[in-house]
Image (cartoon, rainbow, N blue to C red):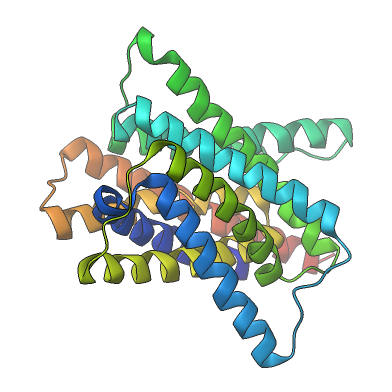
Length: 291
């Protein structure tokens, strides 16, 4: 249950991050934001670790490099798809991660002769249908490369979640995982910014946006890392759909976006699948305890 709550917090903070990114992108640029959020996280995590007597050093550099590379590559594919597709389509493709995860879990269960979690796999499909009803994706044949990039980002996101769990099994704390991921974001964002984007426009408004981006991104990454480190992978993935609800609410508050009947029904489906998934997790624990 704790991992699902961490995922719920991450979903909310990523929605907040998305709002800040939309506001700051004209002044900071997309890759500029990637670089800055990396700097903010590295500095704050390093300072916190020094304050409490922890160290960012690790014996698992190879595992951290793999996780960080996959995470940055996933983020890069998503940003590229975002530049080629309508926002609703790109966001919908991002939420295919639970579908890839469900397929991977079912294949693993079949290979290991474990009873498949069909109910959760079906719930992930139903939840995605709710996402599609809210976001209403659409694309043309000329945007297929953008669609491919979005799907690649989602697939890499699922693989990254498994890699995070492996790091947790190696007793690596969540904050250290985020530290190394953020460290790789710095050179990638810096190179991309200087290669393709104009200079960052700095004023007090930009500073406040930057603070919001740094805080929400850092805490969101720690929360999602904690979520993937434990609990049921499929339950966490289904709870992740809640980001659509938070994003829609923020859009209604900041921009006065209206919610159609179709979108409202989609949100009810997302809530229903989330409740169902968490109840299934509790039921599973009770069964294990009764043995």
